[in-house]
Structure formats: structure tokens, C-alpha cells
Length: 227
Image 1 (cartoon, rainbow, N blue to C red):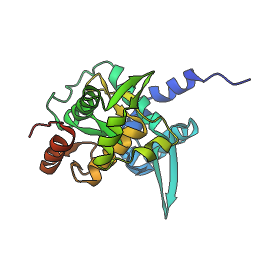
Image 2 (cartoon, rainbow, N blue to C red):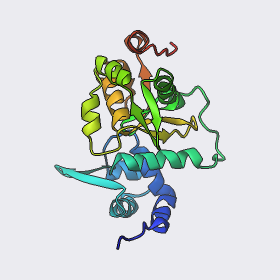
Image 3 (tube, one colour):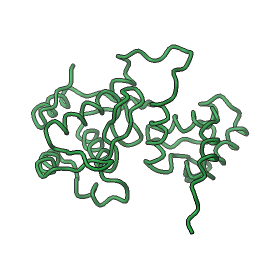
């Protein structure tokens, strides 16, 4: 007999302001130390350690030791998708939010795939061009899509063989619509980054589309992105 998911416990874990902020700090896919996470959310290292133990105990974080330091990262892309969805449905804070044209809303990383206006528009384009097609709670890649994405260097076969969902929607907190998640979303983001078409900002989730990237995306995928 399988046990029911303990929704109440995970809700209490996510409901603590310091813990949800720690998860948010890790949304760019980096690994951070306990001290970096503690100071990042404004708590003492001792208090931060308690929060990290709870997050790790509930399967939301994993850690690796390197030398004298222990580094923490999100346990899986599903955790990132959960945090992004919470951001999307959370009520507006009393403090002013980032403006509509701010870099974080324009283009950012959601763990290992592209989010923000760039991620949302890219998914819409792939669907409009019939490179992807909707499936039950997910997306399927078409033969044309596999060919075109392969031509720009996206390793579709490796994404299909990954031990995670192949292609799925991930609710974007700023756009309130889906961007492309799953193994395929990660493969697309990885290719754009390694090709230099998209560049990550230092110590931030934000990304920018480079001049060469705008040209390549327009010529190879007919996808336009403004200067």
C-alpha cells in the first residue's frame, strides 16, 4: 500500500519565509554554501543550518561537500518548477515589484531552462511553427521540430533519454503563462548558452540575447527578438 503525499508538511516547509527565499536563491541552478544562503535571506548561520536541514530532509535540496565547504542546490527540476509555480500564484507583495521591462522579467533562467518573456515567446513560437505540438499535460516534438532543433545543435536524443519529463510547460511567475521546461527545455537553453547566443549575467538569474544570438535565432528558427 503506497503512502499518501504529506501535503501539509511540504506546505509548512515552503510556507516559512526564509526557506522559500533560500529556494528562490537557488533557482538559477547554482550551488551555494550554507553561509551564502543564510546571509542571502538575512538569518544567522545557525538559524540557516536549521532551515537547510529541513529543506534537505523534505527532499527539496541536495548537498555536496568540497573541501571545507558544503554546497546546496535544488534536488531536481521538479523542485524548481514547484517554486516557479508558487511565484506565479502568490499574491503581490506590498513592496513595489520589478517593472515590466526589467531584466528579470525579460529573460532569466528557471533552474536549467529559459524563462521570462524570452522563454514564453520562444515556446509560443515553437508551437506556432509546429516544431512542438500539445500533448496531454506536456508537449511532443514533431519530425520537423526534431530536424530544425537538431540543425542548431540541440541534442534531442539525449533529452529524450533523460530521466525526467521530456517537454512540459512550466508556469512562469512574471508572464503568467508557460515557458518550456523538462529535458528539452534544458537542452535548448544549454545549446543557446554554449553557442553564445544567450549570455548569463554574473551572480543573477538574468540572461541577455547577444547580437549573434538574435541573428542566429532569426535565420535558423525564424524567431525574432528585439535589440
